Amino acid sequence: MPQLHIHIGWPKTGTTAFQHFCAENPGLLAQHGISYFATSRGHSCGTISHAIAKQENLKKHRRQFLEWAERQRDRDMLVSAEGFSGCDPDRVAEVFATDRWDRVNVIAYLRPQEELLEGWYKQMVKWGGKLSWAQYLSPRSAAWKLGDFRPGMTSWSEWCDRNRHTFIPAIFERRHMPGGNIVRDILSKLGAPDIRIEATPRNVSPSAALIDLYLRLPPIEKLQKINRLMVASDHPAATGSGDLFDTKTVALIRDRYDEANEQIRADHFPDRDRLFDLADAGHPSAPSAEGLADLLINTLAETHGQAVADRAAKALLC
Image (tube, rainbow, N blue to C red):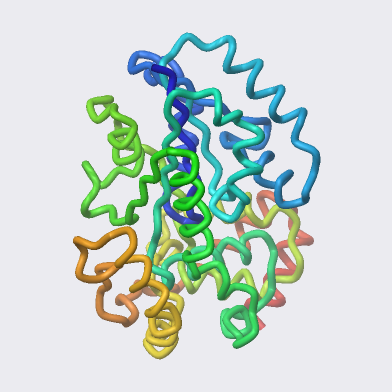
């Protein structure tokens, strides 16, 4: 019977890798009765979540989706946007006509807050932001709301209960996923565990050392493009994860969300001792960053010209 699967995120839980795989492999999904819908915003339905956040009229999005759905012959329809986690479920349902499906499944992944907040901060800097991470996590910063999963979890789970849909919460832990692969993990939850998947591209994180260089740069256009080149380089200090916050900050983050996480665990993951299987706080040993600034300057010279590279060198090497 026709089913609709709504993948709602949260951010920094492999959503980009999953969406890219689905958009690039329609034939493989079709072999398992799955059709993947994406709007013009990348490989996801991010355009729709943005429209909901801006309180726009959703009729054109609903029409676009329904016209697409009418052309499909597969059993399952799949949509994905990490922004759905913060949306009003009724507004999302308005677009995807959830009352017309025999079954609706909502899939949500959660990630330890220190990893989520680090990933989101690094993404902001890649977009050109100049806040230090201490400012980013100042006591009144809006960033703290990102790590409180309770409002979204409550909103979506209650909506599913009211409408007799199925809420499928999960924890983003690669070591517990089939092959460490988020794509395989999500597809197994859709009832397609045997889809053959090669290694999927991951959204590689820039290291704390590289982020520090970005913060010291003068304003640079298309810094995200530069970042893609830097993390794809063979410099050992260009990439890193779990290397940004000091031990004290990690402890502060965990303490801030401890009560909320325990409530979520009790409500949705009663078989777990803790919501997240947390490693000891502390920085991993980092490779030497020697030559990283020179590599960034040379990369800027190739992509933006020597004048931009000279300004960067003045800022980084003075």
